[in-house]
Length: 140
Image 1 (tube, rainbow, N blue to C red):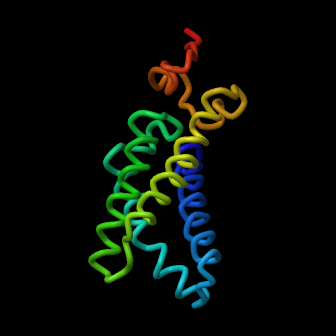
Image 2: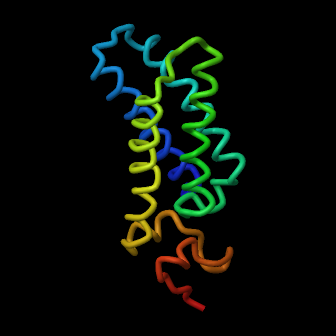
C-alpha cells in the first residue's frame, strides 16, 4: 500500500499542475484536452519512478524525489516537443518551480511529521530510514 501511495501522490500533483495550467489559459477540450496535455508529464513521472525505483522509498528526497521531479520535467518537455506542443522558456521555468515545490515539498513534510512518515517509510527491518539527512533515527 505504501508503495502505491507515494506514486499516487506524485500523479495527483502532476495532474494538478496540468489542470491549473489549462484553467489559467482557459483551455477547453474536456478529458481529451487534459489527456493531451498530461501524457508527456505522466510519462516523465513514470520514467522517474522506474529509474529511481521510487516504489522502494517513495518519500525519500534522494534519489526518488529529485529523480522523479527532474524526469517529469525533462521527459515531459522532450515529449511535448516531439508532439508539437509548446515549450517556451517561461513554461519550462514554471514547470520546474511548480513541480519541484510540490513533488519535493510533500516529501519534506513527510520527513518532518512522524505520523505521515510511518505511512510511507518502510519498516526498519526492510532497510535504513529514508530520511537520514533530516535527522530521523532508526529504531533498532
